[in-house]
Each structure stands twice: as structure tokens, then as C-alpha cells.
Length: 145
Image (tube, rainbow, N blue to C red; front, side, top):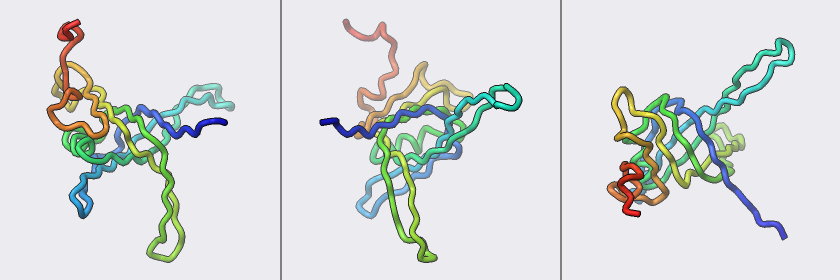
């Protein structure tokens, strides 16, 4: 019997600044939108072109707060997560549907603005608190083995 797998890995750029909000219980939830380019060869011209694909990402908890604090429009990120299908009734009474990605981890790529991000990428696994080992920015020389 085959196992079910629901896994998505994307690397792209943020198309807008992160949007942070909180549930009534106080849980942070951050919305991201990223663009991932797909290269295609135009059959008419023979030229390679890039077509952007856009994805909505939801990031929960401390990880979402970190995304809202450190990320901005244009910043490259890597997202590891799962697809989730949502349905709802719109205000006009029509049924609406969307597929979004629920992030298990978000990796901040590149640098923040003109400044440096401490010499490396920041990896924030799901449920990681600020100041945890996930924030370690040292080099391999700092590892004691």
C-alpha cells in the first residue's frame, strides 16, 4: 500500500511585505506571497523566457513573528511545507476555493536590505523560539567536532 505524501519545497522572492495578525487566542499567523519563476522555451522564437508562478504561504506561531520582523518585499526565501485546500462562502453567496501552503519551515536567503544578516542564512523551523539554536549564525569552525 502506498503512503500519502503532501510536501512542497519552494524557493522564490516575496511579492509583498509579510502580513502579521493574531487569532483570538493570541496565536501569531503570518501571510506571505512568493513568486517562483519557471523557465520555458518559446516555441515561436526559440528564446528562453521566465514565467512567474505565485504562491500564498501561511506561517504560524513564533516562526510567523520572525518572518514579519525580518522579511520584506523582494527578499528571497525557501519554504518547506504542505498544501492545504480551503473552501468558504463569499459575501456574494458564491463558493470560493483556494490552495495555500502551510509552512513547516522558512529559510531566509540573501541579505536584509543593504545590511548583512550575520554572514549566513537564517533557518527558522516550525515552533522555534527566538534565541534558540535555529538562530545560530556561526561557521562550521564553531562546531566542536
